[in-house]
Image (cartoon, rainbow, N blue to C red; front, side, top):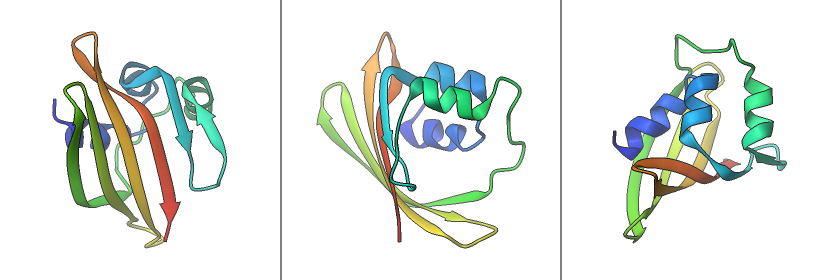
Length: 109
């Protein structure tokens, strides 16, 4: 699965997908200014949660190889309801035969 497909998959806020896709060392600096880890994200979602409709458009998606097993993804999300725009950056690591997200930051614009 490509990085953009994985990023879009996370927009469904599925507990099972977050559990698989987020690296155990995952760290996020959220749009709130707070720092989160994998456990924080899983607890926030809840085991039964999953959005059937995605409320964000992803635009200006770009990937850059940082090394053979690390990719930097940058993009903007636009909330379909509020029109809030957020610049996002993610670091993905190829680990155990699959890509996992180990860092993410969102900045409101």
